[in-house]
Every structure is written in structure tokens, then in C-alpha cells.
Image 1 (cartoon, rainbow, N blue to C red):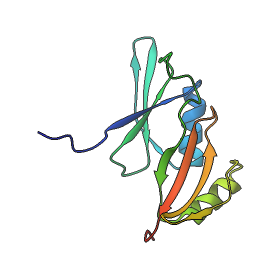
Image 2: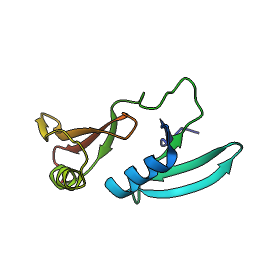
Image 3: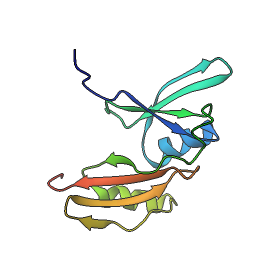
Length: 123
């Protein structure tokens, strides 16, 4: 049997509530699961309809908050996402064009680096 998709990516954060607010209110993600997990909380977020989720982790010493860089999030309209983020007060780079598509970058409240990508031919 072959592996067929990535189910979950761990994103290290300092404050789960602040991160949920950022991803939900600024990026439009939904909270898919929230549950106690021993002394911690399991919080899973994702864009609506996405197959892969992100879990907001606070318990991995080897993954300090802000240590993830280059987490790529796809869109069909990078200009609209950029405009929405800018209007919401998120510090976001200008949209840049590359041979493979267009993109902008930003950081979450902990400094994790996110890349919003519209691949060539995506509309």
C-alpha cells in the first residue's frame, strides 16, 4: 500500500489562541479539531476544503515558535489574498512574479514564514 497524501503538518507557536485568531481571522482558515491532549491542547486548522491540516504545537523543544520557514499556501488569486491581508493589517511583501507563478510572503505572529503562491495557469 502506498502513501497517498500528507495529512498534517506541525507548526510551532507560542500561543495557540493568538495563532488560531491569526489563521482564522486573517487567512480564512477553519478550526477542524480542538481537544485536550494531556497537559496540552490539540488544535488543528486548515483552509476550508483542504486535505492537509496544520496542528498548532507548543510542546516540541526541537521546534521553537517561529522556526518553520517556507510553508507554502496555494491560491488561485494571489492579488486578492494580498489585498485582504494588507487591509487586515498583516505585514505582507509585494506580489512578485517568477517563472513558475506569482507569490507574496508574510510571517505569522511567531515569525513562521508563509508563502502565498498562485502557480502559473491558476485562475
